[in-house]
Image 1: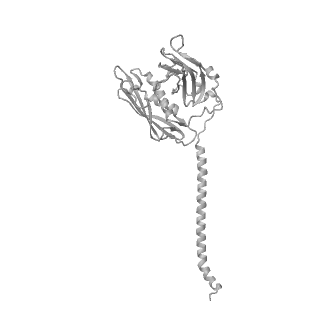
Image 2: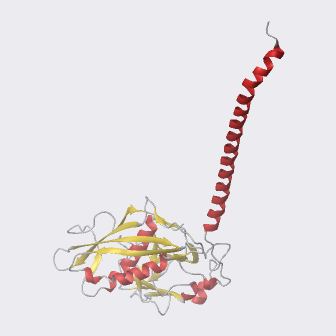
Image 3: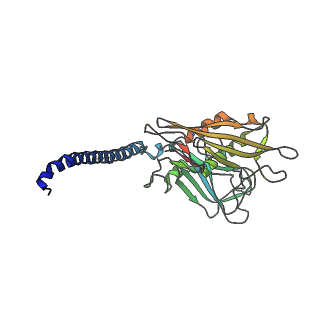
Amino acid sequence: MLIIKDFLPNLQKISMPLFYSRLKYFDMLTKNLFRNIFAAFIFTIGSTVSLAAQKPSFNKPANFKDIPVYRLQVAFKTAGSKNAETDDKVFVQLSSNMNPYYLNYGHDDREKNKYEVYDIIDPTISFIRDIEYLNITKMGTDGWNIAKVQLIVNGHLIFNQNYSKKIIDGNDGASPTLTFSARTLQKNAFWGYNNRAVHMPPFVLKKSDLVSMIEGYMGNQIQYIKKYNVKWGNKKGINTVWGAPVEAKYRNKNRLSIDLDLQVEITGPNPELDVDFDIVVTCSQGKVELKISNFRAHVDYLNLFKVASFNSDFAKYLNRSFNVPVCNAHFNPDGSLSFI
């Protein structure tokens, strides 16, 4: 008969090594588990701190006039009355240093009862203090009845004026110019911070925003081409527009392709003037830069465009310097531009 006390020494010889082996294995698993948990915790905390550190901040100027202008727009609503619309050329000026800036988009604008916003890209307006007045001039004698005038900076309304009837024209006793002085602008209820972050630039520009900025800039520039009468393409006679006047297509995270449909007005059928270029975004050490690249047009008309000016003027409003060491500016597949 086997006595337990006789078996115990043998049991201990067999079981204790196995026990210690399993205990050591369990200890190793426990250490690895806690090491992984700790590493994940450190990664999470580190990522949170890193992301928070990379978010740029912008000082709020004490003086409203010292706010940088990242985007400048004027908006109008044409009255709904009979013959309120106009096909005449219209330009604006906001300072004595600014050349007439023509409001010339590719669609039929300033139509009856329509509200339209125009982007202005002009190197003379860098800060709100550069806005000396708002001058609106209509050329010709096709009267324009205005119901609303607005000035928008960095996406925020800073001036608004409504009218029941305000005609600007070159005949019938009306004035072709409507002017708002600096004092008038600054007395407006919308002038000032008014609990809004007017000093903050947009961190994302939609594709439609970029298209509007390009259309506004190019629509103004073609008014200054003297050798030829260059206009936006249309479908009258020979079709010189294919899709929208300005189209943007995503290429990759650093490149957006732009297609402009223009035409040259000559005796006989107007030839199509197709203009293509890329917007390239780069980002290093918190500095975002956008450049116009690969500018292409028909060889007979390529020298009509001041590509260097376009590049510098466009970049002036879109380049950013963030107070963070790293940035991630890129184009999204939907064509929008993200600065962070």
